[in-house]
Amino acid sequence: MPSALPEGEPAPPSGELPANALKTLGTAPFGVYVHVPFCTVRCGYCDFNTYTLTELGVDGASVGTYADVALREFELAARVLGPAAPPVATVFFGGGTPTTMLSHDLVRVLDGIRARFGLADGAEVTTEANPDSVTPASLQALAAGGFNRISFGMQSAVPHVLATLERTHDPANVAKAVEAARAVGLKVSVDLIYGTPGESLEDWRTSLDAAIDLAPDHISAYALVVEEGTKLGAQVRRGQVPAPQDDDEATKYELAEQVLGAAGFGWYEVSNWARTEADRCRHNEGYWLDGDWWGVGPGAHSHVGGVRWWNVKHPNAFASRLNAGLSPAAGRELLTDDQRYDERVLLGVRLVDGLPIDLLRPEGSEAVAGLIADGLVNGAAALSQRRVLLTLRGRLLADTVVRRLLGF
Image (cartoon, rainbow, N blue to C red; front, side, top):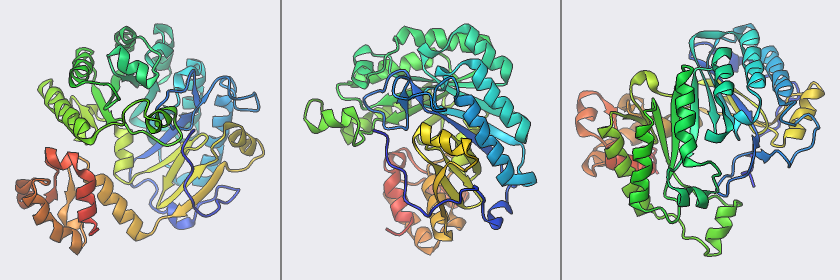
């Protein structure tokens, strides 16, 4: 089952934000995230807020009516943000599988963003997709409608690993989908998962080589996390499959850095590699750099000016609130200066540009020397650039680095 929403204070039915939250809107790039909660099947490891096409009725939450519901939230966003809202710099359709919707409907949603806020020059517009959820015709329609980037859920090139993850696509379809996306001018990213039970180091090498052979612009590689409440979590708990091992995942991460680096991909965030700086996912960089974004859809999270809020999770409840003229927000929190500082350290240290030492509080600055001595932080960068830059070992132990910088 999908993970629970965080605790927080009640969100106003109007969606109104505190006046001080809007004061800095426009001083940094503004993004929009669109959560599409539909999948054809639920993968055994997934705890995202997604639903199969047969799990929902037609109470405003069906795949065929979802575009209209999402557009209602954009009307709300336009009212709440008012004239201070800047043109949208990045748009990201995630899920779920956004391409379970018709390309025409995805473009209609993008048109709604364009009509209400405008798109900044050179705006990045991405959709996630499964390799078997697109066709040359659907990709052509997306590109013609303003999408310029697509992220394919490849996960692995090895059939038995895909079977353990309950991914249904044929590995051969990934190359076909990437070729079709490139043919219509879309930038391409592929997502990989490592540490799946039963995956050997050679299996992981096969997946890395297959991803490189696709010649994408961007590759993400994430360690498998077994979440409570998922089918895979139950299988691990019952001893039917082994739990992922930290040492195994560390070895596979090191192999990813070696293989991807040799192929011309540079890491820019602990789990993300790009061919060039221009190929980085700018939308995700907005999250990591404390930007502002509005998240549309059931369970979607938003952040503007130090206020974070999240929508109700079930698509029918989401649709019902919007149809009644109410905000779909279930709760919110007004971040304190301490919380924003902690998040700036937590996220900033994971980036290739690192974290300015001068930004750190005294306990963080004092911890840097010890982190250098332990081989977790680059000493030369700390001295010459006054920045905390992770070494490869530091990337493997990023959580440890963060705790020490925060004085824990």
